[in-house]
Length: 129
Image (cartoon, rainbow, N blue to C red; front, side, top):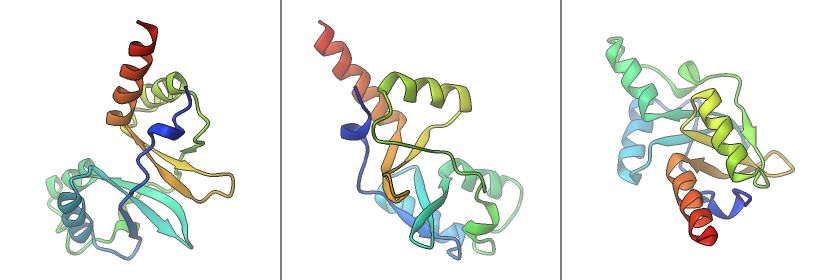
């Protein structure tokens, strides 16, 4: 099974110039654990609730730091055609809870999360029974 049909398409996006405090508020309002960082209309990174906690734990004011200052620069993206079990292996190996999914043009397709993975695995299990 490909991950494409399981991917969350309604993705929260933020700009590199947005503050971490704003991004955290928007994540809380939307009930999501991540936001895709957009630069020049394409994904350039991902920020998660854990990133917010790390900054706060270091004593840094999240209202004084931008998303661009803390986002990882080497975004690893995947295709919607990625196999479900390959996605699971990739997430486990890299320690990722979210995968940014892009189309052939490198534009944002959606986000594949641990929650989406569980849904897919349950669907696979149900079909096998």
